[in-house]
Image (cartoon, rainbow, N blue to C red; front, side):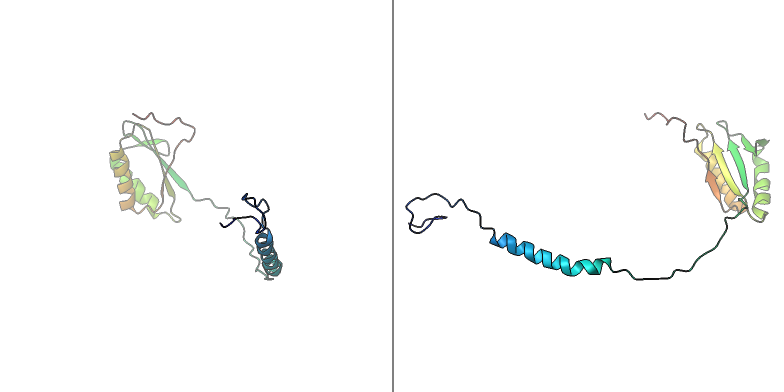
Length: 145
């Protein structure tokens, strides 16, 4: 009968209680040597003289035009009521300015999407390149059904 984990001369058949640490020590020594060799390579830095850029912030902010639309679809150009028919002319005049102003759309929560889509289409046809939506982040979220 073959005895596992015991000595050849012993009559007991209990497993050997000692752990063989030689493979563990071998692996740790190999890892230590690898880290000793690679550590100087990781800390080596290449010296580069980068060019210095000197620029100032543009003091001129882009002009903005605020177009507000209430829940009934009424439009207000910079706080002044404007008819839907006159909106296209105002958008064309604003698009012709140099530099072109940004169009900020402020729509009421109850505004129909169709009204917004028509205004954005008119602004695009007039040549407005920059259109943004203004929202109120502090307002509570709409209830979900």
